[in-house]
Image (cartoon, rainbow over all chains, first blue to last red; front, side):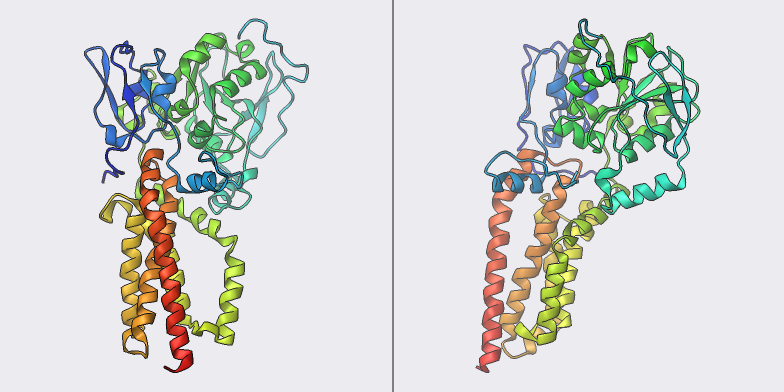
Length: 94
Length: 358
């Protein structure tokens, strides 16, 4: 059974003009969010995006932007307590 | 290797012996440990301990270059993390192959989490290629990375700075043989992250042991209140409390796809609510004096506990986004706090009412 998280939250954006259709984004995406069609990458399943940032980081033409991060409540709470960004602890959480 | 990159003097230090190192292969950069592709007892018990959070952060291998079989300068290079559970899976998957394994220093963290933190990253990869003297060991310029490493590694940057072409292999190391057989082509299936019931099950022990740290204190307080009959805490209350923990930290993760809704805290709350109703019913709370207040306190506190613990599982899951969890928490956290506070107030009311004999 397919697990799905909240709808309409992902910050993933694609700049069609910059995309050269090299396809690396579709390779690295763990949730089949992107496909290459007509020599351009297309976002076909934005709600499956978990904002891991692999596509944007590996895009050689900087055509993709996403506010990358880890969807972890513990990290967000830890960040809030320290008055900063979400961060993983040193306690071996993961 | 980038020109002008200085190689430190202490390079090619010998990686110490270990039960899973079955030999050494001499090379221009010193003896390279040859690792077994069958896991031995200590590897398996090590994995179990790590799953239960025992010495988890010490479950590592020394970063550097290793090999399986009889590799030569044309053999493939697989890059992985120095978390031993990860490393073990990779060497097991390479059974029957001749290959090199380059373990990055991810501080004992698995590939995906380390990539998210940046320790399985472009910088460390470039550094490790140089430190291991990889270009003196292999004549080709291709390295195979686990796909999930892409969160921390920019393939085009690695190529620009080292000359090595990064090929992203499958998500799971067990797919490496099929990936190699098909000429380094991964199928859709190999590229997709799964989160099946077994994947979820193995993650729950660490969720529980994570709670154990404050548990001795909680246990002492509970035992004290139980013995002294302070606040009239009964064994049934204790069971209700532990049940809510189990539902949030274990049962919700296991039943994740089957519980309706999308938000983790909602799923936990739903199970916690069913549990609270069952507790009220089984305990016959409503027929007791001031039973309404006692029942209310159960219904407000127990689901909130389950909801909070279920929310914690977002980090272990493989499909939640930062934006999504932030959105969920904006709603869930105030509700959890409000529900717990109100629950404690009603508990106090019922306690005072009983004590006062009103």
